[in-house]
Image (cartoon, rainbow, N blue to C red; front, side, top):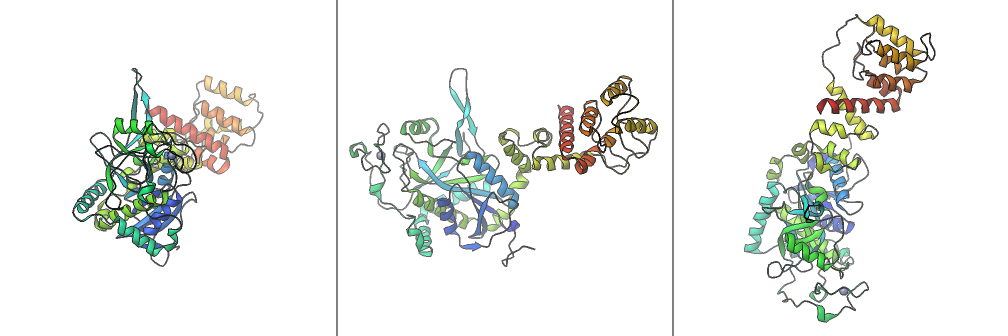
Length: 493
Ligand SMILES: [Zn+2]
């Protein structure tokens, strides 16, 4: 088949790194111990780089645009393309929120999401509802990363306390291996360019802080080394960029958020992942792009160090995200129809309601569920009503007939107490026949279904009206799938 020389298939990859932007993907790709040839994906929405870090085969995916909704799309697509993925790392840059005396966050430091008693490590602070007292209550607290990840984060943290981290070493190796990255500023930018202004002092304009008042700079102790520090805590996610210090400090007050970013919330519910952010600015009006490449590189360096201590055997023991969830299809469809996927993760029946037959993926899934819902036993050959069924079917095959225009005939037929769901000598119902008629087919089919014709009655060959429509008439196929879905919905509720 289409397997590369490595013998690696899509199933060989167990870890996913999702990167919001190209600069972040470049950093992760440059940290790979080995790069693998491309593999086919089902759609061309996502762009992947494949390779190995430590004992793990890793898929690196970049998003077409930043933001929570895009992150969810990319993740679902990735889980369809790589079905053995066990967990993900969201690796990128973010805005730091220094917390006086507790978290001395500097540019180029790393913030890693850490669940607390209250939050799952990430809080979506732009999602919530206004209560009666006018208080805005955030409802977007998100799932925790998988246990195997959290255990190894703690292990790494302990190692760092004893021996220090390997971030600088990984950075040096990356630049040695890829000297061209010097051009892209993937190196430390200098303490003199790491300036934190007072929250009430706004940026004076321009692409740098050259014209900003240095007397408004907050005085911080110089560090002894330029080696990044790693902070563990809550990460705030939203679809809006935070670029003012007052909002930033409010987030710190309310939730003890250490870092703000724009993707994690879109992932966490469906895609258990650890969020690793290199700090590139202070989420205030002075933010600029100078530190972005370096911040992306430190986050990638942390991801590499973490993956290199996780044994492959531990990952193999973890369930795949698909198995864990078993619901990616529903989620994917929820995204396609712009319904929040969080709302229904994801009872089968409930998901059926939300599938839209006008959307191709949904239609395929609905038809699969429809066929699965049919009885397995063959249809018993009961010919009690066969003559009647043939008569009804014949009448509506024609455009004109002795009984008058078709809708009137149907109305009278129902009024007289006749049943539409009866089989002729071939097991076919009037609806089967209506679907192959030449004249006013749509009207006849709709009329019958609205009058109660059953779309799931099989003929003696196992064909239902839905199957006939699938072959004969795309528009009516959609109509019948919708009719079936709505009937399932009502019988459930
Ligand atoms: Zn400024």
